[in-house]
Amino acid sequence: MLNRIALNLIALGFTLLVVFALCREANATVLVIDPGHGGEDGGAVSPYGDVESNINLEISIKLKCLMCLFGDAPVMIRDTDISIHDPKANTLREKKVSDLKNRVSLINSIEDAFLISIHQNTFTDSRYSGAHKFYNCDESRPFAELLQKRIRNHLDPTNTREAKKVPKGVYLMEHVNCPAVLAECGFLTNLRELEQLRSPSYQLKIAAIIASTYLTSY
Image (cartoon, rainbow, N blue to C red; front, side, top):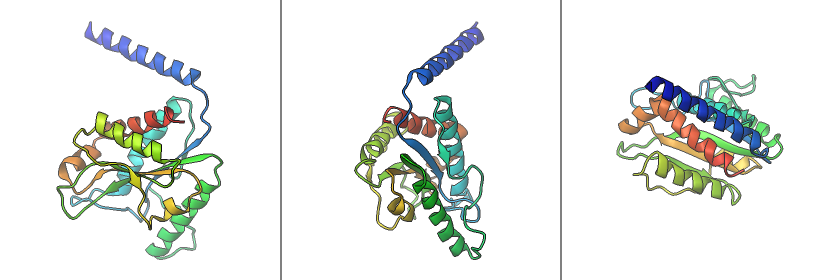
């Protein structure tokens, strides 16, 4: 009996999703999903060896799948563990620089783009935790603020952080021509949060909050 009820609820939920996808107007913007780092540039690493680029990619893939379910076709900067540097780049530094420039070039080539760059945070003090969102301009500020609020309301009530303007020196965010949000999803140096970020179900929750915020904003 319970299994039948569960199946009926799943069927109803799927039907509602399809109806919503068919009825909503097409977005005026194109969502670009940037899983930060990749390839030899793994980004931050937890004290237990968890590599940031892998978690970034897992969340990004889930976000892409959710967006496709609602009839949107986002652009993924990468969908595997690769760097998109030029072949002539040799050293790790050269590859990082080339990768960032190529990301900027790709993003700036997309008309009406809206960028969400997925990252993880670290700090020397393991007590610090909490997702944090940054915006690059006034146009992306409302989205970042709403996303930060929804993370607090639906995922982490203890998170008192507020969305902020991206700090100076973040190359990607400074050089893209479109509105953009840098989504720091949590701290790899906080054990409680690290265990959550490892979880596919928690990753899906993050992706769902980002997707719902985007779909109701654009």
